[in-house]
Length: 288
Length: 291
Image (cartoon, rainbow over all chains, first blue to last red; front, side, top):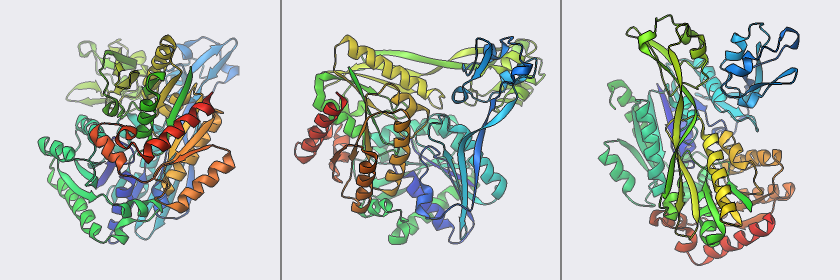
């Protein structure tokens, strides 16, 4: 069972829900938490552990082998991203523009552009009790988040398999990194806040998961601020509201110092249990 | 004309609320650009009229013309993005997974795959109630080119500012440190970092500032919700001192931020007391530091 926790808007409580749900479930079963917000990964902060395993994340880019090159110009012609160009007597590759499509490499008649790994980020892993944690982290200055997201997911699924409950802490937004993060999940939880910003961005996120045809539900965080429009929207659209987490300064303070909130506010255990139950029931019963 | 970009690394620190307040305070002297095209919210506070709109095409998407397809499967083998699948006797390209590299079309022996320009969103020029103009956009779901749409919004805003002889372009940036952020920072004269005193906020501030340093840009910092965690606020102040970043203001943890959003207005209109004073002082400092 894979649960992706996502949102259109940033700062609605994705990481809060991911870390608390993972730690809560890990009290009685094995859980894998994968931080896929590779541009700004924050989940590890809540466990205060250093990595027990780490490795470099690479993407594949072409390397020009001058001795084999005849300067025929095919490579720059076939690259739709302008990532490889001919400058006088040399071929120049722009790694940050390269999408690793292999067209230049495989269409080069001389085999002068083998694909080679280029560092783009770092993967870290640790275990605390039943909780296995995996994080992808993009290097500063690298622009493409997708390869780091794909690597963290692949690592987690190869190591732990599909049987273990897996939680994806996804990046904000609705563009390619989000799709990459949520696409193979069994259920998506969209975290929002009951303000016009929250509602607007929730609608975008709903459009995204509906386009992907995935089952999903909504968690309303900071319930009590703003207005009732998010609830009305969910009612009209027949979207299940899995839980409402009340607005409280105490929650904000606990989050600020990197603490898990359900440990200090025991009522939240029931909330987390209900969220988990609904996800499991929806996946088993095939309910949308 | 100078360009001021507001970013935060972490989402939800108050970027848009702060930027909209500056837009209100600056009135006619700025053109506003909402570069958080993935989840653009500025229009909810500034009452834009969507006066001009245009479709935004960027990159390509490949499509199989079924009539000439001989089901050889070469395209599916070539595709690195698992975008081409075979089901019920036909090959299909999933437009969401397709990166638009066009490799499949090049290797197709019957030439039956075509590349079409990809519609990735829409962009707008609006009159806003501060008496000025705003350039904003809506990215289509799952689109891959948010960096390019960010660049489009920014460039259009710059051109407008030059035409209309405005002093500033004020940019609301996206969260993160990746391609959209890099795109929103290019050409900036001053960067406003909006952070919060949480471990995540501090962590993300440090990462995004590394990027700002790479571009050798001048920056200043606003600590929002500063009283939420005094220890983390001190950690931020220490970081600002070490890096020689001007500390523009401490804003309190105040639910007026959410109330203003709920009313569809800016904080400086909703709370004319201490919040307006603090934001007005920050805006004056930013102008001084930018010029």
